[in-house]
Image (cartoon, rainbow, N blue to C red):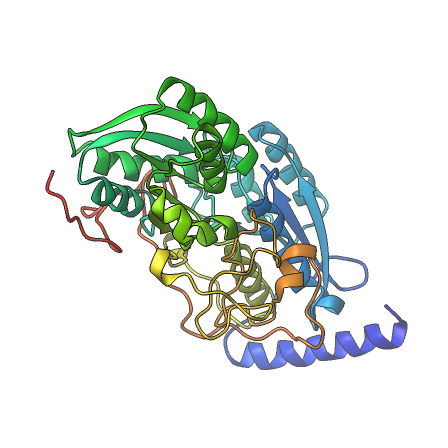
Length: 413
């Protein structure tokens, strides 16, 4: 940054500071030598398309004006060992981080370090996965009912009878635990539903295909599959075992899965289901919220109000609509197969929250030419329910935990 540009930035920051003080909001103080915000993008597990897209969204936003001149973004990938992410958090705090936007590997193991960072003035914004330390912000769809609603959808498809597989995510992660708990709450109500195989697929198509193939070797007569991310791999495993037989599958938001649900040939072979699951867009929403708070454009929330809910996507076969351009427009929600890989996670766009993004943002981490950061709607925050062990510690279990919110039961237990 040139001296002239830096002076302009400082002058602008000073002017913003005066106006925000008058409004009762005070911007924080950037910690880098050149006056930029030092923001860390902290990933734990990073081995699938979802994680790449979520990270790319943050990178693209950080390069979009005016953040391209006010944010220094550093990406750190810790892996699946909680101790590694704890160590990385400690280094970020020691280096003077202003904010950390993160996919945490554990809901509990990171708490002490997160609290230490909060006490040092660091803003923690978790996306998708959550922690139970109240000083952190959890921006997540985790409590919006993926597990219970998709489980009920599968039960409905099977008329309450059948052998099923559970294709899970990453062991010990709050997302996987919450989804599976919600799903089992439904399955346990139906004696005719038998879980004959349960395996971890790490939210990855290739791993899902491998693990599903192993389960099919023992249970070729499976009637349905409840899957988290990686669900397109389950379809490939089924076709590999018998090219003429598919079964109902409920999964997440891969482009290949949505195209498969709308494929009449696949439907004739037995495929049905729904695409719900986790939007990578949560990372961008978390990043923009954090930046608005750092810059004094939005007030921070009390610690008992920091669980923020992202809505649950829900696309059945009849709802699949192909996009003609590079964003979600006119109600479209899926791209042609020659546009993106089958593993591409479609829910990267949100016209209300993230109008700055394009397909290149999700695929490459590139800013959209000509785009500038748009403020979030003033009333954008929806409080998520507190759930013990998921996003809070000393809190009561909601009376309506696992209540169906998106689908109705058409089969009696």
